[in-house]
Image (cartoon, rainbow, N blue to C red; front, top):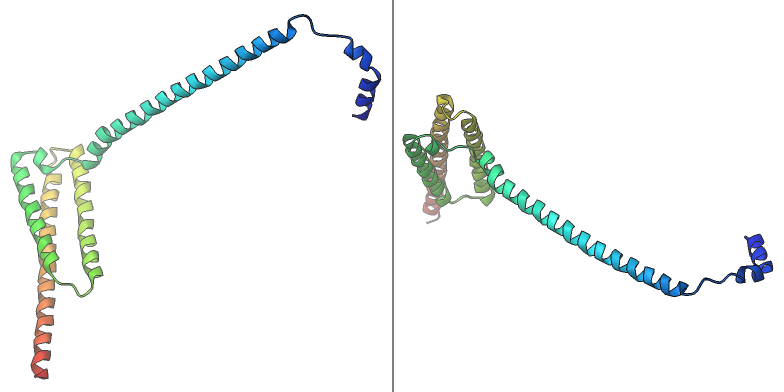
Length: 185
């Protein structure tokens, strides 16, 4: 590097001898302005195109998710097979909802018990969702339809059993508290 500096210093007169031609700086400035204009317009156009493409991809993705994904995940309900099955489904749905309300009226000693119970009952619904998917693939399969109806019947039986157990526990607690009060008098 020192050698290069030394060579330049020794030959400075020969390097300074050559000057650019007339109008060189003006031509250079014009080319620089054109380059800067092209560079800016390219970026803005490119960004606008990229933004439009991104918006289109997002909107089409949302449309596909809304229209396709939910139809696949929901499956077919019994009411979509026939009117009679729809009535059966409505009857059991109302009955199950009524039983849920009865469970909600009980006083639990620990609130976490109620949460656990409701979580267990909702896990039964995942079985029903699987049956709905099966019904989607085979809408005329009587075995799947019968399994769905049996699922409702089983769920009602389980909830009735739970309600009986809760009622017995409540009666025992009530009897204990009455016995305790009668001995304190």
